[in-house]
Image 1 (cartoon, helix red, strand yellow):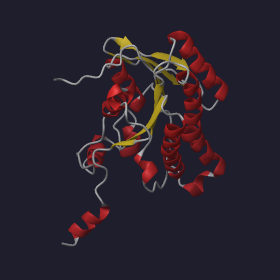
Image 2 (cartoon, rainbow, N blue to C red):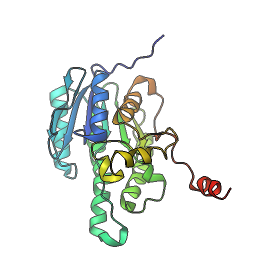
Image 3 (tube, rainbow, N blue to C red):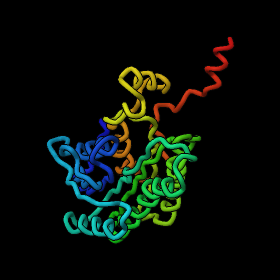
Image 4 (cartoon, rainbow, N blue to C red):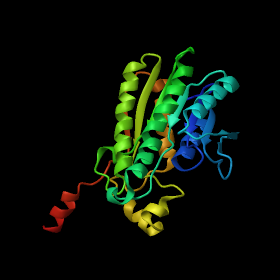
Length: 258
């Protein structure tokens, strides 16, 4: 028997769903039948669509709690409910700790940890009063579980986000499930800024056990699973979607000496 996931009738909000990983998540949810609202400070360059359906864009600064509350109130008013929040918005540039200053690094923490907390609190106020509750997915990073020189504040925020999700999963059960999806390196329209040209991207991909960077659709498919009834008993978990992780450096060093 074929296993399909049908999210028809469900309503999802994807923060930062206008491009990159967020757009991949949005398209996967649309393909599964969900109604999707995407939010960011700026609209997408082109509509985010899949399966003949288009996500609805709402502008918001996720660092403004009043604006976030208003966004989720509008979603409830427009759709009558909220079944899924994907906290995807975030990111950082490369900056060594000694080069940034405390205030600059604090802004990275605000965007990658405080903003998801703010959005989750607003979503919970909708989900806890409706039949069926809801689900929240944090988009973490492998940077949260390894040293992250050049993005230390980002890695610290993602580590905190995973712990936050586990606490939410306990406090908000059984009404709301909360999980973290932990991507590794993903090939997006901005990959060249991090990994160089096509040859550089391919070379980086060869360091991954599965031999390539993830595509945004890989992350989206995992989100669809976590949002579905197939994951009804999964909460407080971290799902790693990283192609097998990283080959330990000592193996290459040992091989070089043989």
